Amino acid sequence: MKTRRDFISKMALGTVAAGLSLPACSEDTSTNQAPAQGKIPLAISTWPFGTKANDEAWKILAGGGSALDAVEQGVRVIEADPSNQSVGYGGLPDRDGHVTLDACIMDSNGNCGSVAALEHIMHPISVARRVMERTPHVMLVGEGALDFALTEGFQKQNLLTPEAKARWEEWAKTAQYKPRVNAELHDTIGMLAIDEAGNIAGSCTTSGMAFKMRGRVGDSPIIGAGLYVDNEVGGAAATGLGEEVLKSLSTFLVVELMRQGASPQEACEQALDRIIQRNGGKVDFQVGLIAVNKAGVTGAASIQGGFSFSLYQNGDNSVHKAKHLV
Ligand code: SD4
Image (tube, rainbow, N blue to C red; front, side, top):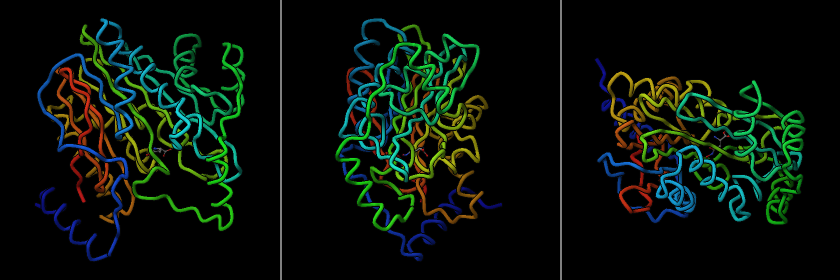
């Protein structure tokens, strides 16, 4: 029987042979793989910019606040940051120039809320939370999501910054759509937190793939794809090529693997292996996963190199390189 290790080393050779270039994440100032000890409270989020989100989340967690508040408030910092071109305000638009946002949130009771293809609202994560708390539904999309946000008092605003508009105009000259391996063209923030009481919550928010088709929705607002939490077991969040995450419901899979006894690290790697195998080993795209179990042990992995994550635990908020499988 072929082991995973055989498969991975083959993959590595195949990648070199195919001459794929795998650019590193430009912001990466990380140390090595995550510490494996469990300690709560904690906040873990995707990519180096997650440290800013973790800082905000930590203010809540350190004061004894809930994981749910922490994951909402944490990612709002990134949504409001115009320099981040893959989340919220300042996000790169679709091919027609519209900034459309996807987000979801999940609490420790298994409740969840989600919005997709939401325009003009800076904080889709907070709209998703309102969907969870104030409607009988899980998910609202497009105009309906916008109408709901406006009735909830959210302000309509232009999310297309001059910088994002300029990049879109530049792109439109050739209008070539090629999802890139890493790069800021698609960097979602996913966050998981455990509060002092031991409760787990998660959030995920993105402007999706830059220059996507109008109406395209990725994995990020889909419960079980971009995010999944089970308070008995743990949680997981995803970043990368949403279509691939959707095809295998990667975060649901990570949580189920942990339920069956896998460590968070093993679960992330096995879920990514599933994607690699589904593609017959031909993986020129990126998917990254982060996970945490009930004991506060974390894990993270990606298909390609260049994925890192931010972990605030034990008084330390720092960036770590995730192990990659190819
Ligand atoms: C999407 N998963 O819309 C998101 C994009 C992303 O890192 O995560 N990029 O497919």
